[in-house]
Image 1 (cartoon, rainbow, N blue to C red):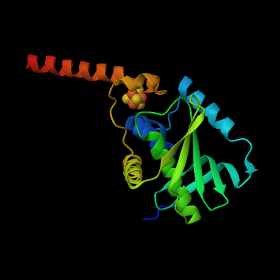
Image 2: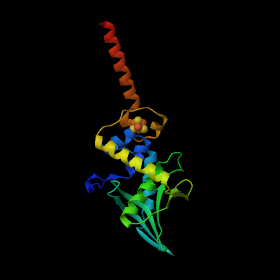
Image 3: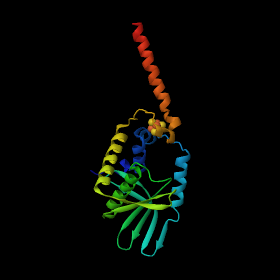
Image 4: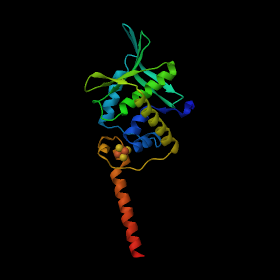
Length: 208
Ligand code: SF4
């Protein structure tokens, strides 16, 4: 399958999807956005990572803010850093606030960047790296079959969600406290309104 340019979805949407499908739909289908302390920290870290644009060190050329796209997977985005090593190795590096997460969302986002680079450069990329602000060092990521399969699956799910135009219902979970869209999503209010609606329906039925 080959996606048209207009149908390419942002790689960052994979992060939103993996964090919460409703958040992903609110941002990418309903065009809602809000920033909280966590997203602001991440944005500042990325802005710092993007300067200077190009740099050459012994044996490696470093490119920052490199535009990426894949017609095969229907993705587009910007890599924080791509290292072009003299031996032909390409290494994408993504900056993240905080420390490594328990889930796979950062690795999947990086793998999606690698898939774009592979298509653009007609090469194979075996490894990338995540740089966490709190640790101040790189964590290597291997793009093995397992991670690639999870990235393909997440990409398919993302396209299905966006194509559906639907926003999944809110489910209040502990992660909602870290969600920048909490005040727009109002998961508690939705739960309350559904509860109130159920109560109202039961009252009407009891009157019949
Ligand atoms: S507040 Fe919770 S349910 Fe709503 S978008 Fe954020 S994480 Fe998802």
